[in-house]
Length: 383
Image (cartoon, rainbow, N blue to C red; front, top):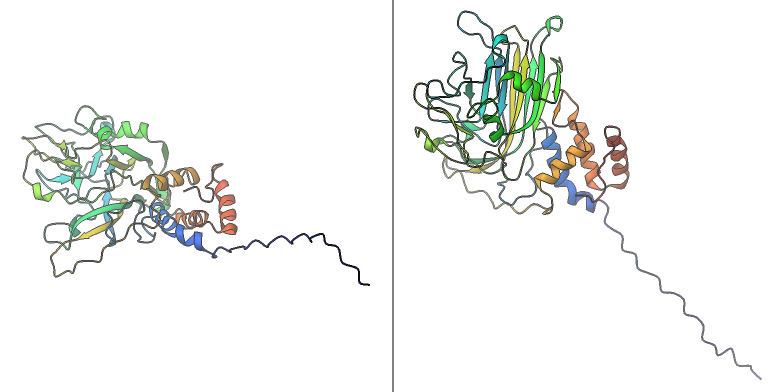
């Protein structure tokens, strides 16, 4: 007789959960545009030419421009201007030309006895009316010649920019003081000296957070792009000759000596930001070299036999904005806005890119390295 087995149902074995492996590097690829753009913002001179994040009005055509000048200058009679500053509003692309034209790059130089005197700006001597007239001069923006009437491009959007000061003095003779101002609005700048006048050299020497001796490695101040400032702009030359032109394409509208004062031209001066380099105590003419470098997205004009470019798609990371990029850099690399010109920013920015990339090992290494500079570090998926 065969005994029947136990009728009690056997417990079913638990079903195995299906594990779906994430593709290696997927997150890293999705964050690649953010990391690449951060590299460019930190290091406009050497960073990759990539589109800015957070906007769908980009063009897909990127160019890097540079303007160079040397100071101090010499006045008539052999008088050397021992101090001065260069103020630049990089989101504009102005001519810096003569009477009734647009300007965004302003140079002011003085002697030691004039440090506390703001540049003149009235109907007798307008701002930009000349170094000899204690009113400074407007210089040509690096991108202007590529946007002027008849040029290949019609408008440009600045997405990264920096200003550098380097000394050409012999090592044994280097002397002088340098102050960097990393951000000041046009509205504040134009009313700093007095109503309708820019600040004096002494005001900026006192205002700048970073004050140091002239360094053989040079000095660099980096402009931080903003959503309302970093927009497509022309040169403003279409209004040249108009004595009171108001346009978003110009920071200042230059007046004329013995006629009109220089005015603020843009309708939104509170969002137009500048970077400033100030120097003092430099007694040898022409030994300081100033470089202005900017990267722009260019809008192609229908001239010079050019063919319409393909449509540029929206950014991959739609949640990322210029503000999140700047905020992340401020928290992870507090010194990125002002540093030595030969500062190893390229390596640090690549490291920041790895942190944003989300690769587990490199993110850990990146956070450890960044904590060496600050207690605040980026976390995976924070942006």
